[in-house]
Length: 303
Image (cartoon, helix red, strand yellow):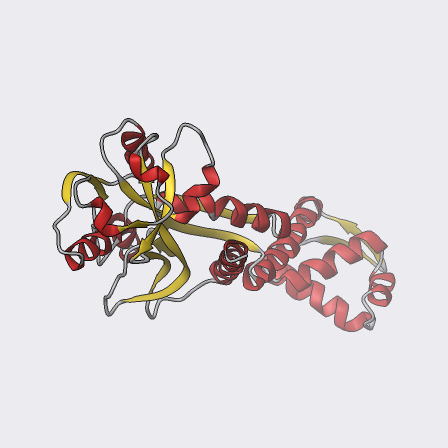
């Protein structure tokens, strides 16, 4: 159905005559009359009973007029929403992320998005790097946030932020009293480490630091989630390393967190996307806001 012709038909009905409608549409009467007849031919119905200059709606014309308002409203709204999708202020973005990103970055990102663009819907899936990579390659998510270094030809990786790794100690552990802790001080400790599912992660860096210091860490636990590991440390099962963002918890029910003086270990949070895959304006907006908030977090931690 030609929406321009529908609009002109609606105007003829509302103005009550071809002449008045033509003036309202800023056109002359003959072209408008021809347009209405072509509209009737297009629909294969008679919309008006014509008696001289008088026009009377047929039952088909009355039905179309009632439906026409809704059709034109839908068309106008669709055009508006299409523009919003193009501008990145309406749509859906699907994110896959690790726990720390979901805890410490996404709440601020999503609040900012909803404050600025309430018509964006965010779907978040949490999991380890292997899961996120699989979801990305299957096109189930648009963007991934991981902590491991992913090197693959089909994946584009960019660093979101870099932060220190902190040593998590049980309460009343002797090392809590030391002003400066070195990796060699952990020679006789039990290590609780995160499983590295893809690329190089925290465990790899810790093990390498131990080897460089002349010992092999006594690893008694491999896990996939940080919070359960911290609770195990709290109960005295061993020690672990966590990104400095976990300091935000500041809870007496969590282990003591200390900087490692030597060597200084760091971890990166990275954005991963599929190379050569079209990125919607909504996804670009999400990335821009996430990067801005991550940079503010870095600036605050450096003060």
